[in-house]
Image (cartoon, rainbow, N blue to C red; front, top):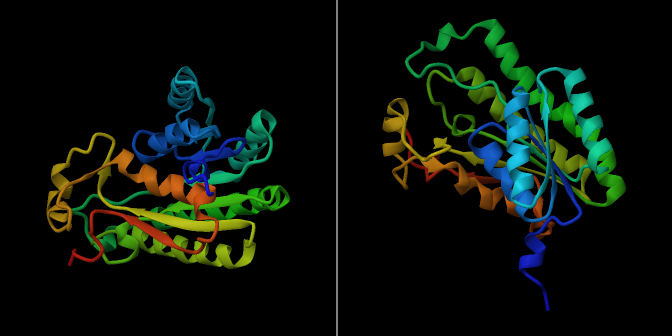
Length: 255
């Protein structure tokens, strides 16, 4: 008989959470630790990551926090090296770092070359670099899951977010390419959240978008945990190249 709940655990696995700031990243890091993973959580704010890791350890989990600029290749290499030194091979990558949207009232053509280049570097090139670093470990271990975070702007134009949305759309296809290339032992999937906050409170700038959702409210960061656990765990070993939408029905309802 299948032990259903055991299939959702990550005992003995190491999870690297890149972009562990307040919101989805920190919620997922806490969740992975609760289901048995050794967690390495990173962001540019080292103090914040150290505090998050400390709280996870106080709750009985295993975690370290690492200061890392995900847009710098040398920082990524140092991050992976430190994670391996602490916990050994990495089995799960949860990639949540990004160059985000412009102010919602900006003009499309106000997007600078520098912003577009930064968005490409962090939103697409960085997760590709990480995959190149981590897939050999995952293949050797016979288990790997890569999870990349998208945005609704990758599926439907939300002005003026051309750099953010276009590069996240590129990340979606990049993830599908990875899925084809790294199977069967390693899987690559996406999660697409909608307007989400650490506390679930709707910010005025997003009220119009949220009102068009099938579930007409802002999402709470913890509501992404289910998809993150599913895709990281053995419960989804026949799922790859897919995207789970956790956006309150936005893609199908927004104009």
